[in-house]
Length: 201
Length: 401
Image 1 (cartoon, each protein chain N blue to C red):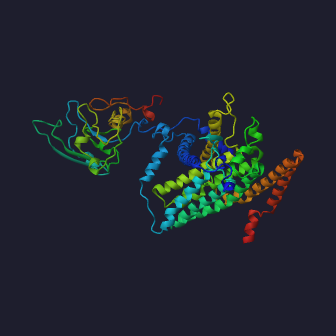
Image 2: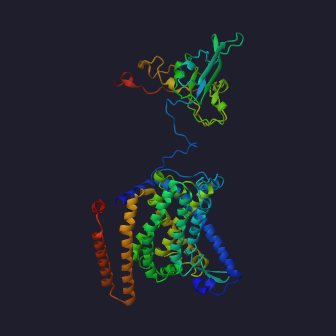
Image 3: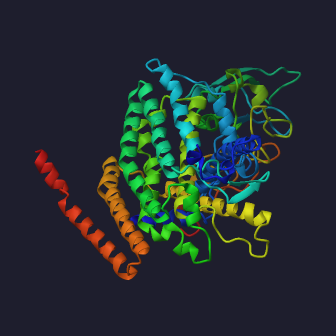
């Protein structure tokens, strides 16, 4: 009577809780280290962090980043120091969100947010320039008309870097070693991993 | 003329303008009812299957997503309709209508309510009550196959053709068992008219549920009817006709837009019609207990209660079809043929014979406790003999070799 058993299974399922998340009205929490679209961060005084070194462009395996640096104008510097990112473009039709650019960046200027829902209607929208990538004065990502985000989804623009020790040494795991980024995104470090960091070991 | 139209008292006193008007009104109501039922059924099916799979199902169009089918239908109207180069264009265009018209017609004989009075005319709440009632149903389900057959043939493409060949083979295999399972009811009721069959199962008391309704008296035929009806409507688990893993979409592979929608409409209408026929033949049709505290001839008890009982029973059967759809995997082709030819037809034959004995015993006043068990015993004996005569699988192979 395998058939009756089958009917029993479907009958029982009717009274069990639904697993559906009613996207996009409701969204499931994203993983700690989610790789979404990038932002270009600023210092607290509003200076851009990017120094136009093109390391991100060099490391990008998808060749989706285009950077041109320029000398800071002496009377109105864009970034502290000598040079700044004059042109900064990321082509999201090519980007694979590997985060190598974030790791390569010496000034932590580029980080990835958790925003990933964008639907362009033309290819030009897919190329984010400084106008789209640069954070606002309050340090938050700029919302583009074709992007879908709600609530506090633009929090935590620096998930991945924050969870890692800058030196790569496990001793440093759990320490927030992040330079003074603007505003928000400050949150507890991930639980320690590996035998060294574990309190029991 | 009156012999053909008979049945309905509406037509027995000559035909005047009011009668024509009533018939037209009934036609429109039945037409609309069937379309709304299909809309409702598709939504209901999607919701129930979603429940059985821990999902939510359609919930955006209208309250609880009830307008989802309407939205889908409107979308189909605006989609491109393509015809393959190799298609037989005339037949290709004709096929969907050959499929949908019989589906509509078959529903016309279903009694959905009791005997009511409209504009002073006594009439049944059913579109037509021909004396050949059940034969009409068999005719329509047979004609409906032409739509499927011709669609597959006219598409000029291999998968549709395979699908339609399967459809005809399947319908042929199950039509016999289907017809024979109906015969048991006809023997009990002594009439072909659907109204007559429904009246024979009229509600007298609570024991009518078991003693008057044919599902219990002709339980074997009822089971065979349900299985064969599911197979005839190409409903899972008998949906080999459109087995998408093997045939893309079966006979409607090449169809797009509203023509495709019409095939779907016809398919779901057939499921609803078959369920309604099962209600009529085996579950007493619109009969059921009236509300005792209201007047017997009041609007509620004459109009509403029979309709309520009919649709309640229909809902139960429709839920059953959805449950089957959600639970059972598709049959293999040889299993389909085995079940049809080696089991259902024999059982249906024997059920008819047992029924005949029971009916004769009833009419002749034979001792029931001897005649009925004797008939059953004889039937089981014959079935055993028949199965002994069947070649085993390995024997059949060795003969071929």
